[in-house]
Image (cartoon, rainbow, N blue to C red; front, side, top):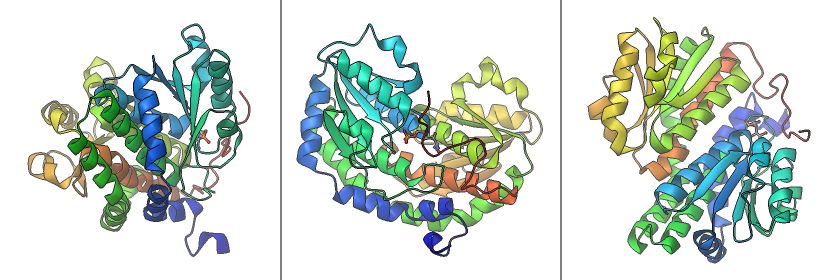
Length: 362
Ligand code: AGP
């Protein structure tokens, strides 16, 4: 149809639209406002982050950065589990509610309850004046344009862009990060559209080849360490929702505590490699999978190729960047992997069974 602009599916069109979506999100970001919010976050008694599905994975990235970079007391939770926190919330707290649609009922309920208890709420959404932003104290918008595919793609990477800028700013205010390091993060984020464009061009053929292997599988693991973990979780969610392959993500270090029991000959295990600090233990985890005959796929930036290029069955190499930007870059091959696997299995990735674009019932 005309709306697909020549692409066979909206999901593929929206994956390819990400350079533009990121550029427009960056252009639309008011850094003075981000700075005001960064200060509010740094000064908050406690920072809560809530969201569902893909937006929750973006929330986990924010949580990771606020804790590890800004040294703040931040905690992300699935919106549907908000009741656990009711007694904990007080005036002086801030809740960051992330919802691309701005209408997800669980996230809206969490927003209402937190506000009633005196917390300030910052909404991060892709839809101006949707319900959650309207009921919040502060609003930040991604500029991804309308997303038709049920699977979130461009709204996710643009969320990551905004939330990384916000976390870096909070870190600047909390003293977790100096001015120079802060400028480096911002400069990198500005390069995201170009690097994502390069990634799409460079990885698609390789991803299609790997999708051919995954198309006949029923299970897969997605493993990582550090900031790469929520990206692995998002990759697994995409694979489940559009290709109906049972994909499970967990910290690579947890392998030996149970999940590895399932791994046998040709079991697919996808690794996202982001943090330099975790290379050695991560390599150990890959070897453990290899020893059981697993089909391992490593998504790694070019600088890690010398060390890890040979340990995986398959490698998807991405451009080099700091972990802050690799979250965005590594989402691309994972989205494409889910898309191509779905198509090869004969499914329509735009219309996954049992799913609605926006969930308005609890
Ligand atoms: C993403 O691919 C899913 N369709 C789903 O998990 C979605 O992210 C979730 O329902 C949250 O939606 P929201 O961002 O509009 O609140």
